Image (cartoon, rainbow, N blue to C red; front, side):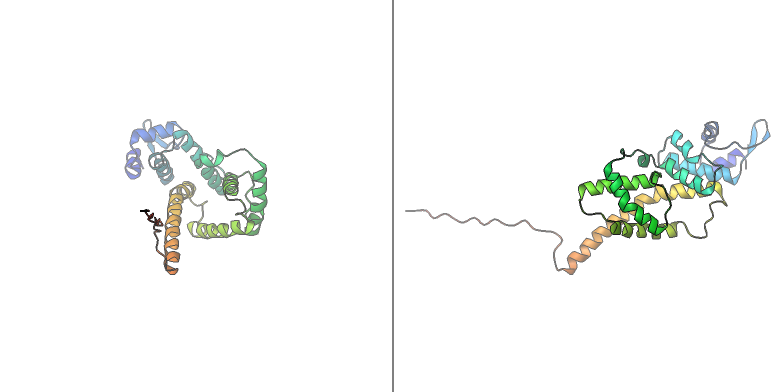
Length: 230
C-alpha cells in the first residue's frame, strides 16, 4: 500500500508516519521510485501499536522506540522485551533489601510449583517482590506462600484465556507485540476496577446476609439532667 493508504487505515497523519520512520520507530517502505514507497500489513500493525502508545497512553517517543525495538529476536524475547520496555514503573524499583530476600523465599516456591521459570531479576518478578515488601511492611504476618499461590492461580487463569493455546506469536511479529503490550497496558486498569467492584458487591452481600445495614449510625450520647436543689 502507498503511504496515503497507510495513513488512512491507521488514522495517523503522513507527517507523523515520516517522523516515526526517521526516528527508527517504523521501518522504511520498499522503494518503488525516488519519492515513493510501498508499505505492508506489518507496517500497519506496528503503526497501530505506535499510535496507541503515543495517543492513548501518552508514551514518549524514546520509550516507544524501546518497546518496538528488538524485532529480530525470538518471539518470546520480543514479547518479554516489549512488556519490560512498556513498564518503566516496574524497573524503577527500590534497592534490594533483606526484606526482598524474605519475599523471594515466599515467592520462589510458588513459582516453582506453577512451573514458572522467570528469573528473580526479571522486571515483572522484581515488581512483584516490591509489591510483596510493601504489603509485608504495612500488614505484618499477612503473607505466606499459600496466600501468594492463591493469587497466582487466579492470574494463571486470566492469562490462559487472554493468551489462548492456539495463539502463535511467531506467525505475526508486529501483531504479537501489539497484542502483548496493549493487552497488558490497556486491560490492567480494567482488572483493578472490576476487582474493586467485586469487593464492594462482596461486602454488600455479606452485610445483607447478616441482616446488618450498610451504614452505621453514630451512637447517641444520653445526657442526664441535673437536679436543682431548692
